[in-house]
Amino acid sequence: MKSTIKPGIALGLIVVVWMYIIGFAGWYKDPAMLNMFYMVIVFQIVVLVWGLRLTAAEGKAYGSQIAAGMVISLIGAVIIFVGSYLFTTVAFPRYFEEIHTVGERVLREQGKSEEEIRNMMKLSAPMQTPLMNAITGVVGTLMTGVLASAIIAFFVRKK
Image 1 (cartoon, rainbow, N blue to C red):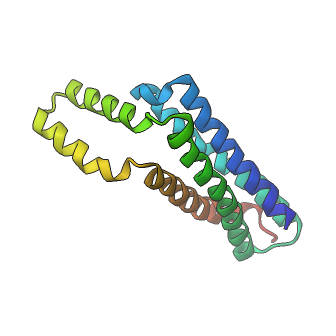
Image 2 (image 1 turned 60 degrees about the horizontal axis):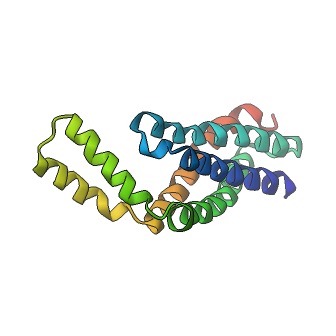
């Protein structure tokens, strides 16, 4: 069990720390730097390789390896949910306003009309809440977890 708990906690903490680095650095306000957030995918893959190597050493076969990867991702996702919610409600309560402003600026620079910008902003608004943002982080973590685990487990499973 420790072979999934430690990596799961590590995954959650690494992603949350990275989220706050992006926040305090102000990268979320810079369209070019905002993409740095996607480093969390690399972090998750590295943690899953570590965790699945631990579970392979316990003799787990392919299916059990995928399940272990999901447990690691689920533990991480819970921590990410809390960290994300606190990020947008406590640490950066104006986060969505600032993202909205950046989004409008980018769309203007792309030559979109005011009506197009209004419509695009209106479409994205329901997802721009602390709860929906945190849920999106959970879903992304779990989806990445199952896909990456299926691939990683193929290479690190008990043979």
